[in-house]
Every structure is written in structure tokens, then in C-alpha cells.
Image 1 (tube, rainbow, N blue to C red):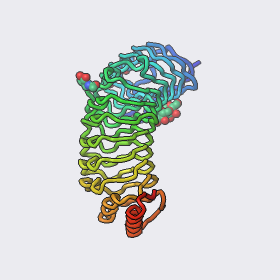
Image 2 (image 1 turned 90 degrees about the vertical axis):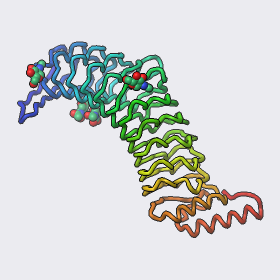
Image 3 (image 1 turned 45 degrees about the vertical axis):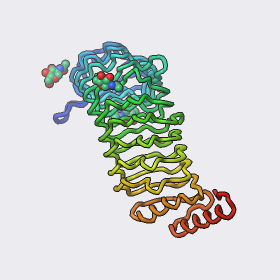
Image 4 (image 1 turned 30 degrees about the vertical axis):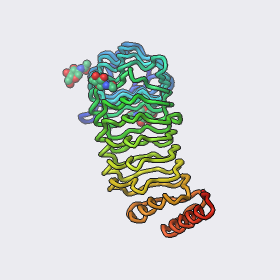
Length: 347
Ligand SMILES: *[C@@H]1O[C@H](CO)[C@@H](O)[C@H](O)[C@H]1NC(C)=O
Ligand SMILES: *[C@@H]1O[C@H](CO)[C@@H](O)[C@H](O)[C@H]1NC(C)=O
Ligand SMILES: *[C@@H]1O[C@H](CO)[C@@H](O)[C@H](O)[C@H]1NC(C)=O
Ligand SMILES: *[C@@H]1O[C@H](CO)[C@@H](O)[C@H](O)[C@H]1NC(C)=O
């Protein structure tokens, strides 16, 4: 049973709202010249020719249905499509050629499906023919791992935003983002099994401004992990299990303004760790395992010299919430004397 609501084009833009509850085989091109919103409580499948003739359609919203399968040719003629929203469905598999004709597509939303990579549910080169794509969202799927040989993404210099959070990834191939040289924002968080990153993962993102790696399980970062990210402004590393950071890890980030390091296992930071990060405006350091050791003194000196940088919640496990630098230094001196005299650390 179908229900159609039609509105005359008001100004230059044509707008049509389509309502349908079951898969339809009517040629939608009769009704749907430019934008198409498919609202349904349980569209379970779409037939291969349902969108036939919609060469001028620019927007298609199929979100929040029960679609579990898509025919390889279902979007074949939709060469004008700009936005495709498939979020909130039950998709497990995608045919390799599904997106091959969508040369105008700017936004592809696939979050909250059941996509897995394990047994070829995500075929190789799936996103190779999307030269106009600006935003790709794959979050809230169970990808688990992405094998290097799949080369999912072809040359994609225009892609600006990639969402890969909550995808259950435990590893990624080093060249996953290599073709996304125009990337501005990478949201790669809430992957609880992700404990390390390949050294060259961010090899080619000289335009990246925001990198979110929060709520992963990162234990270690390579000293050159971020060395190519010369445009980076926001780096979120909070809520991982980082124990230490190399003194040169932020050295090539002249635009870094905001850095989140709270809720890690850091016990110590080298005194020159923020040298070169000249635009730094705020750092969060709370809820770490700051050790009461003499060699943290250099870092405390840096904090003192850089009063302009907002540092919230810098505190020691055993001496929480000291706000004054003077007290922190006094505390460290006390620790050093303690170690010198009695030979053990307080922490
Ligand atoms: C797309 O469709 C869903 C489900 O019907 C609706 O909730 C959402 O607002 C629509 N989005 C847009 C941009 O029209
Ligand atoms: C698509 O748009 C073009 C140009 O506006 C028009 O000539 C053509 O008839 C349209 N095609 C369909 C199938 O509506
Ligand atoms: C896609 O659909 C979801 C769910 O209906 C909606 O919340 C979201 O805003 C849509 N995204 C875009 C870019 O239209
Ligand atoms: C990047 O894109 C080019 C051209 O589309 C392709 O040959 C290459 O294999 C891609 N690399 C990766 C790592 O996907």
C-alpha cells in the first residue's frame, strides 16, 4: 500500500515527499524529479528497478528502514545523486559495483548497519568510483578489520570528512587513508580493540585539521605518528592507555591549538614535548598516573613558562588537584628528597 504526497514546486527548487511503506515497483521518475525522501517503518527490500529513470534525482534518503540487501544495479542510473543516506538499515553486504555510477555523489552515509569485512561483505575497491565524495560515514558497523589488499578507497582527493567511529576495528592497514589527501576531519574513535596504529597511517594528510582518536585502546604512538599533519588544529587522544610519549611527537604541529591527553596512563612527559607546538591554547592532562619523580620537573617548568596555555586538571594521583605551579614544584622537590633519602618513589 503506497501513499503519495505531492507538493507543487514553490520557487526554483522542486521538492517532493514520498511516503511508502512497502517496496514499490512504480517508476518513481514520474513523481520525483529532484529530491526524494523515503519514509517508512519497515522497507525491507528495494527492487532492482525501483529508481529507474531518476537521472535527475539529487537526494535519496533510505535511512531507518529494514533493508538487508541491495541489488548491484539499484543506483545505476542515478548519475546526478548528491546525497545518499542508507543509515539505520540492516545491510551486511554491499555489491562491489553498487556505487559505481554515482559520479556526483558528495555524501554517502552508511552508519548503523551491520557491515562486516570478514567474509567479503565489504568487497575490494567498493568506494573507488566516487570522485566527488566529500563525506563518508561508516560508523557504528562491525568492520573488525580492513585488509590492506582490499584497497577500499581509490583516488579521493576531495574527501573532507571520514567517520569511522565505533566500528570494532582492531587494526587498520597503513595505507587506508593514503588516497584521501584532502581530508580535513577524521573521526576514528570508540574502537575499544584498537591498541596500535601503523607508523605511516597519516602519511598523506597534510590538510587534516581535526583528528579524533579518543576512547580507543592505544598503548603506544610512534614518535613520527603525527609528523605529516602540519595543518592539525585539534588532536583528541583522551581515554586511551598511553603510558608515555616521545619528546618529538608534537614537534611538527605548528597549528595545534587543542590537545586532549586526559584519562591515559601517563606518568611522565619530556620537558620539551610541546616544543614546536607554538599555537597550543589548551591541553588536558587530568586523570593520568603522574609519577612523583624528579624528571617530571622539566615538564613542570614548561607549564610554568607557558601560562597562556590553559591546562585543566593537571594533578598527581597521590596529590590531587594542585593548581599552583609553586606547590607542584614544592611537591616534586619533596619527592626528590624522599627518593634521595629513602630510595623509593611516592606515586
Ligand atoms: C531521512 O529519513 C528519516 C527516516 O524517515 C528521517 O528521520 C530523517 O529526518 C530524514 N532526513 C532528511 C535529511 O530528510
Ligand atoms: C532531467 O533534466 C533535464 C534538464 O533539466 C531534462 O531535460 C530531462 O528531461 C530530465 N530527465 C528526466 C528523466 O526527468
Ligand atoms: C541520514 O539519516 C539519519 C537517520 O534518519 C539522519 O539522522 C541523518 O541526519 C541523515 N544524514 C544526512 C546527511 O542526511
Ligand atoms: C589509491 O588510488 C589509486 C587510483 O585510484 C589506486 O591505484 C591505488 O591502489 C589506491 N591506493 C590505495 C591504498 O587504495
